[in-house]
Length: 119
Image (tube, rainbow, N blue to C red; front, side):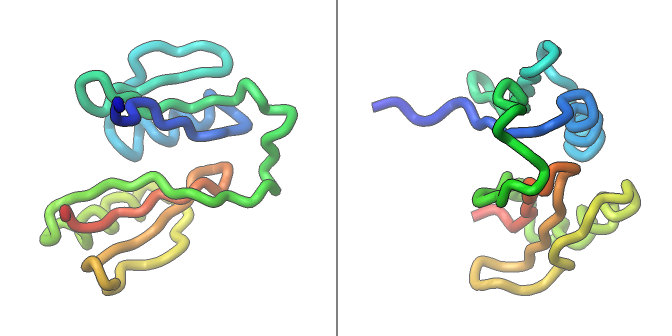
């Protein structure tokens, strides 16, 4: 069995979300189309924005997953300060969890992005 290598985030405005994730993660997409924008996050692994079903994905639709960014434990608070300066929507400020220090922000569609320490 193969490991997953494509992670889709449903968005309502691809251009807005592309700017958001490009600035947040400081990465550029590998290609840009009107409804699909992939970012290569590791060799052969894509994180992609998708609005192809924009007629069924609305801003009020509940979100049930998170995008995760694992960083060295000593940099969680620094990452929070850096992202907060980018005027992101903070959902949870840095705090301790069972897996270590963490925080959560939201993208313009309400999709959650959690920063946590490396496992």
